[in-house]
Length: 87
Image 1 (cartoon, rainbow, N blue to C red):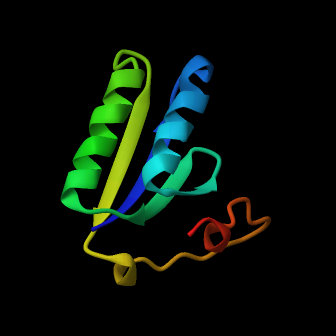
Image 2: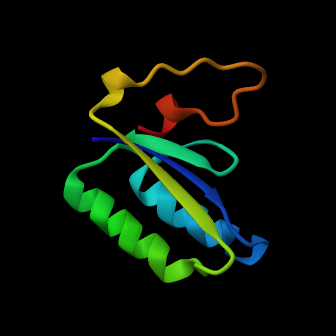
């Protein structure tokens, strides 16, 4: 499955959430990561993120698609992430 992770967390937890996200996904730009995961990897990602965030003030969204073929992305402006360098 293809996962897009978007997060808005307190500044104290941003680096930790990004670090966890990068273990599983490719960083695209500020607070956005994406990539192909197995169901087990996705479960671990959610578990790891859940240990860091404060559910009363942080928000993390996961968009799930069948595979990368379902994703059409159009970019405007500066490309912040370099996914081809990280794979």
